Amino acid sequence: MKRVLAVICIVVVLLVPMTGMVSAQPVVAAETIHIVQPGQTLFSIARLYGVDIWALARANNIVNPNRIYVGQRLVIPAKATTPASNVYIVRVGDTLYSIARAYKTTAWAIAQANGIYDMNHIYVGQQLVIPGVAPAPAPTPAPASPPAASARWRGAYYANVDLSGEPLFVRNDAGINFRWGLRSPDTSLNTDHFSVRWTRTVSFRGGLYRFTMVADDGARVWVGDKLVIDQWRVQPETAFTAEVTLTAGNHPITVEYFDDTGNAIAQFSFVRLGAASVTPTPSATAPSTAPTDAWRGEYFGNVDLSGNPILTRSDSYIGFDWALGSPDPAVPQDYFGVRWTRKITFDKGRYAFCAMADDGVRLYVDGVRLVDEWHPSNALSYCGTTELAKGAHEVKVEYYEDGGQALIYVWWEKR
Figure (cartoon, rainbow, N blue to C red):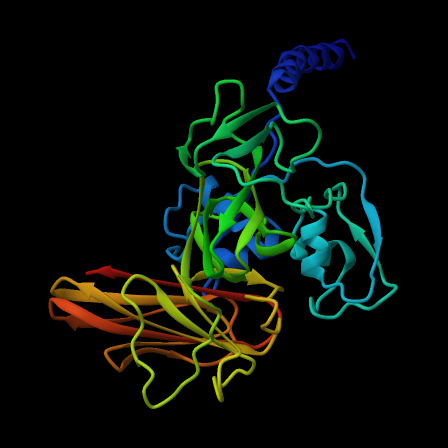
């Protein structure tokens, strides 16, 4: 019996220090790791986990979001802890996209929180749980009665991303032409998670004007009380344009901007195009090529690009993520098509032309079809290569949106 007790004591003595060692180890929160599977894209993986594609790219030091490979280990960034959920009652005219924009969240996050599989199907009176965010403040339109024209912009700078509360400071800016990069607009303001509202009254000659906003991240532009650019979301540097016909006289302009993280860019400009707004229609005498400094975008209310376009405009880039929204109030949210054309000067060499689309896309260089993927898809990337002589070449991109998400990115690189 004594021998048994001695053995038990020895075992206890050995176990006590080992237990102490285990309990002394720090507890480390487990990372969520995703292994890329065949057919997956960074966009589809971001949707799967309900995170922003650019947050996912930043977390994994990915510069080109279209370049991931099977077997790659991706760290899924944690989503911030948020307050208790809200309940929203669907009203006439609502979409998941418009509700998500109002609550500063994503349509995908709302769909996940409510078990919605068809993101185009919600109904009036439906109760939606909004996961952990407070309602976004209603955007403030420009004043109804414009004051006298001014030469400088009144900039109100906020230490948050939703222009809420009192501004941290107000100053006069000669122009909205800022590339702050990773810096702050002012030493008193944080380098990330800030917003600005610029207001100014401008004297216009009257006629057709093009307004351009280059932003990283979100931006909105009002001309008078009309919201002409509405891109209030986290995104890389992207240019947006809107063409507006104005009467001669003073018109108030409001530009709103927010920076999430990373680079901060806000550049706004406008130019007079002519005396009146005229949408070109195809004719025997109409030029077949696009201007060299922008894409000529023809927007159709159908998926086969038939008939006359319902909207024609100049787009600085083909880089759009409309989600569940529309390119323009004149264009339907689903079942629309676009044809972009442009003359571009290249050096001699072999080039890869690529497109990422949800849904169908075709890409031509000098009339030769390099990408032919005219079918529904989920943000897939396609490339085609060709040899180019030095000089100008015509590039044409055709796109259609079938239903649900709408996305199109186009780029090229010399091989």
